[in-house]
Image 1 (cartoon, rainbow, N blue to C red):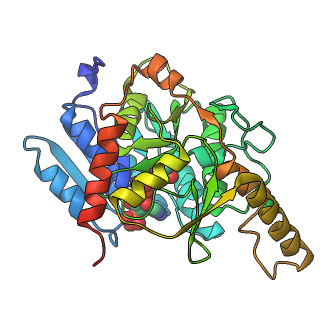
Image 2 (image 1 turned 180 degrees about the vertical axis):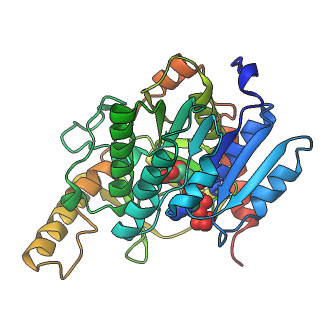
Amino acid sequence: MVIDSSDLKDSLILVTGANGFVGTRLVDCLLKNGFRNLRCFVRPSGNHESLVLTINNYSGATIEIIKGNLLVKDDCKCATKDVSIVYHLAAGTGKSFSGCVLDSAVTTRNLLDALYSNTLLKRFVNVSSFSVYSNFKMCRGALLDETCPIDRNYRQRFDSYAFGKIKQEDIVFQYARERGIPYTILRPGVVFGPGRGGTILGRSGTDTFGFFMHITGRHKIPLTYVDNCADAIVRAGLVEGIDGEIFNVVDDDLPTSGALVRAVKRNIGPFFSVRVPYHLFYIFCSVWEKYSTWSHGQLQPVFNRRMCAASHKGNRFSNDKLKRLLGWKPIVPMDEALKRYFSYMKKNKKK
Ligand SMILES: NC(=O)c1ccc[n+]([C@@H]2O[C@H](COP(=O)([O-])OP(=O)(O)OC[C@H]3O[C@@H](n4cnc5c(N)ncnc54)[C@H](OP(=O)(O)O)[C@@H]3O)[C@@H](O)[C@H]2O)c1
């Protein structure tokens, strides 16, 4: 990192979701860059192994691990006491709408309430997601950047995670407007890398039906390697003059959907897949959505036109703003990033 943030090196920095996939790498990135006064907020029930291993690599830093729940107001007060920068990564990522609203939006409101009387706060960095966008009315191949609309058709989209993230952002905007909270928002695409099991093919197709339905297209997948993403997040808390800015986070040299499916088959192991053209899948989603409405929810509208567009329509993505305002560039190039991910996945493949 090339930012001169020497006056912040001893300031107290809070990271929520610090034991999560991105949170652990963010803590590593902060420590690597010489920040020595960190408070990591975790839930008591979480797995803290990677976080503790990471912290143990750095001697001479003051690192506090606070256990609690951001749904508890008193825990938020303890977490935010005397902090200068907050990196807020805790979020609800499950399928339950109420769970996502609680862990993404209510946690954010509680944190911002607790920060109200904090006079030291320099910035609240809210980590959001690409999922908040609506590309429903955009053409295939159009550029999806920070100026694109937010999806307000919650019912039709039927995406608990996106709903929680949109509500989370609304709260940040509201507190900035009414209470002058200085903030930045990052919206990463698909974050991948060692430490995250599971697939990176969610935007290439679906395996809901027992085989991989590969929604074809030459569109690119908005990947960001976890260390590159963490670096962008760190910068969004430090660079001066960017309060109120929103940044999409995607890497350079993004693979196409087809190239990614082939690479996964080659490097992790073959699987059966059927190619389905985007328009055919769109019709399928449309029929599913109509049946769900007609049957009063006998089938939940998990496949619907908005979800189809958001995941598979195929847009172009830009990290221009990230580069221009934050001086960011990917530390790990895409080839190397994929190599590291595949090697992790091979090692951790279930026998
Ligand atoms: N991974 C991606 O592809 C991706 C893409 C775009 C945006 N993002 C965003 O990046 C951030 C980090 O994602 P991630 O992949 O690192 O997710 P993750 O591994 O699931 O981490 C989420 C963290 O939030 C914590 N958390 C949830 N509810 C909480 C609560 N009520 N109180 C305190 N902590 C709570 C979890 O604690 P436990 O460990 O106890 O569950 C966990 O540490 C999230 O805001 C996510 O929306 C991620």
